[in-house]
Image (cartoon, rainbow, N blue to C red; front, side, top):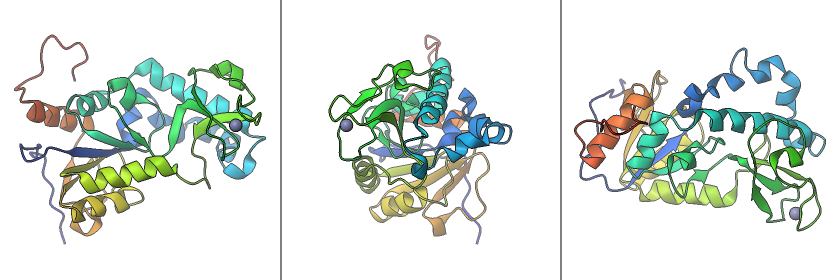
Length: 263
Ligand SMILES: [Zn+2]
């Protein structure tokens, strides 16, 4: 069964509520794409990847500050991509697997962050509600990131608010993601595999609720298509596809020459 593959699709006037699930591919051009890949930090320093497992807490906290602080620093230095900016400008609701804060930096609000945020600290005690924004950059100590090493509420150690292997996704963000998927009339997955969690769950959910579902990928998996919950598969660069969608949504024939951040 062949998948429908179209590149000419843009949202129409019937799409009032656009919900987009984003993954690492959207942030790849900031330099984060090489973080995990071949020759990336985890390849060169495999002990750091081992530290990403929940079972290594609390001894791994210095490595967590180091890794996520560096990652947040790379993202902050580059800033949002054309894809991030287009999503914010078209008023899309965002569900993201990324922890780099670039959707908020682009102006998106109420982002469901399924994997947490490298720009936020939390308490090691999962029952404690303390959270605080961090300062991106190097350093193995909480203080290097602008937060205290001990939780001001309960005294437990603080840590980056990033979901580790073997940790559950944050319930509030997961609930928001499910609610957004159910309420979409256009649901797209961008920069993330369309065939594994969470796209594999969210796209069918959105589709059942009546949304048109679209996968945007430079190199879509061959099995992506109607059977995995996507009505359309667009083989293309998110940084070209999403600005075209934004122009369609906002009724702009071509990008303004006054826009210094345009694609
Ligand atoms: Zn605490």
